[in-house]
Amino acid sequence: MNESGFEELNSFQMDVLREIGNIGAGNAATALAKMLDRKIDMKVPKIKVMQFEEVSEVLGDSEEMVVGILLGVLGDITGSIMFVLDMNATRLMVNNMFGKHTDVELEFDEMTCSAIQEVGNILAGSYLSALSTLTNLNIMPDVPCMAVDMAGALLSVPAIAQAKASDTVLYIENEFFDGHDSMLGDLFLIPDEGSYTILMKALGVA
Image 1: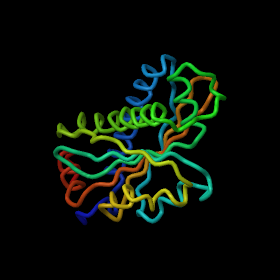
Image 2: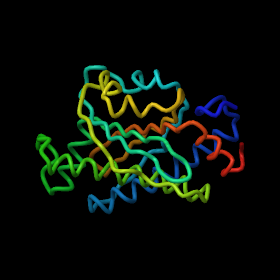
Image 3: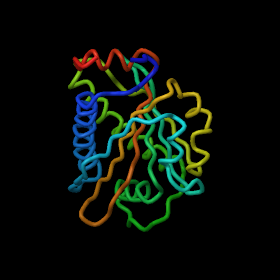
Image 4: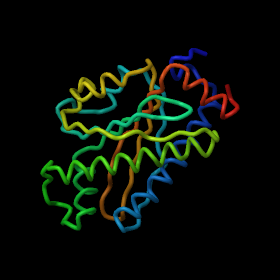
């Protein structure tokens, strides 16, 4: 197994990663429900291990505007987590946080950007909490940074491009809904060299 990232995994190891995704998504739904003060449900997340260059394909229409939230991973393992939210999900979350009608267009002022970064922090914390629970490792998110750009250009944003620490990425597709609206978000976990091996050993599947 190569230490640079997620390589060819057997079915049991993939099941472990799916469990992390399921627990993380459950944590995220609970956190969002508290933040938005409403019931939030989720669909079973889709898990995939991919090459870094495949990420742009997952993001869809290269000209679609999206919001990218990047956080470093600190503690016993290191790396980066990137959340990508489409504009619809971003608008729904922010307007709900501010008690506005969900159709109100977003203005990316300081207050809005701060709210979006907080959403990213909460979602990242949900998944890292799942990792910590299953591994007994100390894992925490760093301060988030945000970029708004076309999906095709997002990976070239300096902060995101510099976060590329390995060739392979764990991708988790999330869909949350509150009974009326659906909110889509993509999570990409990019481990630093050696951190994947530490993670799998802690899970007892290395």
